[in-house]
Image 1 (spheres, one colour):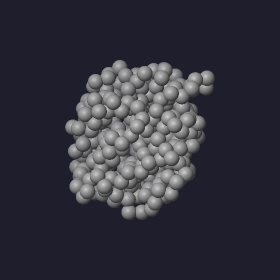
Image 2 (tube, one colour):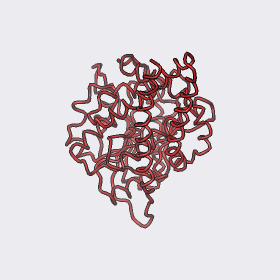
Image 3 (cartoon, rainbow, N blue to C red):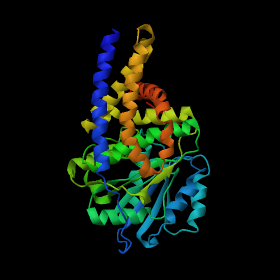
Image 4 (spheres, rainbow, N blue to C red):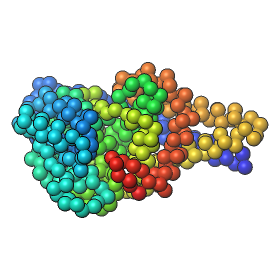
Length: 382
């Protein structure tokens, strides 16, 4: 049994390492986008921020969005209050007295008690219906943006003429173990996203920093067909749009476009977040993503199984260690240029030590994402 598991693990890991090297090559070919300061902004944006019980972060988030080096007449901010039971609504109402381009919508006024499985999608659809911009940008209520965020989007869109734009997101870091773990894990995801989208492969993005043309959103039928899935307001929508506009997807690889957000504060929240992400793995119509995720899961599952049975066979742990070292070296070949872009190179010192934890969490979160439930924003989702 041991040799069978070892051979399968080696074959899977070889395929995985080859895939990582392909992503690395794509990433290295991706030029950093520079904003042309000599041009005047033109595009009118509607920034949509769904919020549910975000009193601790919503004011700072909205302030960073409003304080743009961009004409106030060319953008509006729409906060959709999703059944908050804290002070989220009152905070936004107070801010509205200062900012005329800040708007508040209450999801309860429109659902009127109707139960749905995808509240965030409903909130976004409502906000888009009320929006005035030609382009929609979504971010989350616990995020912050740079003061050149909209300027970067404007310059990129006018230069490249896409219909959908994914952009970078990154966790802040307080140097705790759980913070470093999430930073490194998320940085790898963001590196792969940038590489794959820019190369024209995979419908990958993060709803904390995406933009799309409003008319195209309606053209593809909004969230119809994916509205029964609790998450997926980003990647599932991106795939719908890519099916009709395969050559009009873009990635805004620009430091000024990075959206920052805090990591999950504890392991319970972290696992709920990752289970939520994993829960839509078999819902992707972009099968290249599904098979990539399947390979990643299989590699980690067999590495974990090999570790469990290794003590019972001579040289077992040594063989497992060789495979882990190979995996780490190949992954670092991608992580180093990604970390340089995000200016988190010091965090890579912890990368080798995180491998056992990363393997275990991938297997557990992937399993629970398919067969379990998770808690999110006070709601239990199957």
